[in-house]
Length: 100
Image 1 (tube, rainbow, N blue to C red):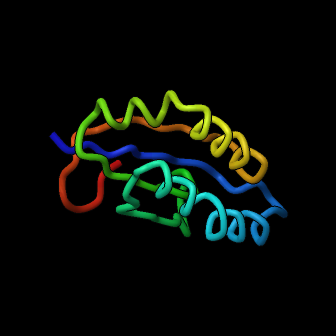
Image 2 (spheres, rainbow, N blue to C red):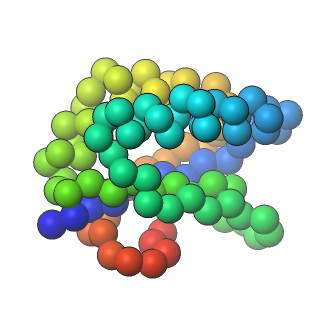
C-alpha cells in the first residue's frame, strides 16, 4: 500500500532566501536520491497553520521507514533545521488530493 510522508514546518524569520536556495539545491535532490518521490508542496499565505506542508510518496511503509532510519535522512533533516522551526512529520496512507 502506497504511503505519504507529510512534513510541516515554519521558515525561520530572516532566513527565507537561504531556505529556498537550500530546498531547491539540496533538500529536494537529496530526498529524491534517497528514493522518495515528492508529490505535494503547499505554502500557507494566511492563517495559523504551518507555513509549509510537503509530501513525499513511497510504495510502502517499510521502504519509507528504511529511509527515515538512515543516516542520510538524519543529516538532511538536520540541515533543514538550520532554516526552519516546528518541524513535524507523519506517515499516512496515500490518496490523491490534499492531505494533512
